[in-house]
Image (cartoon, rainbow, N blue to C red):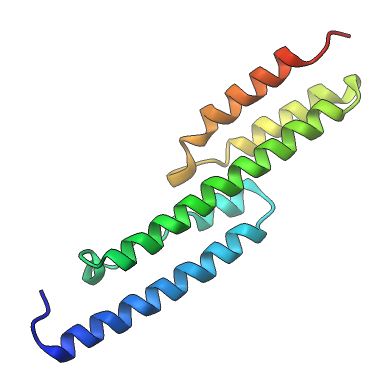
Length: 129
């Protein structure tokens, strides 16, 4: 691809810049506290000039992995909160959970059915009133 030493150095510099940007995005994702924020930050498209660079693709994959992990943590926290809630408030909380999970789109959209399955499992394990 880049045979000229200057072009190689420019690609390497651009790759480092993209990797640093992805690391900052991972840190932001780990601090995010809503599904909407995580879904918005989960996509880091690799610039066309860096398609063949493994470091850039690995950095973008790390962003996606961090987003998926954060979504799983948030879903777990929400389900635990729903289980601890009073029986009267559980329907309202369940509706807010489902509304929150509607924000799981794009690169983390595949986690919505997973979250619904976790909620169904939690409903079945909950003792009857």
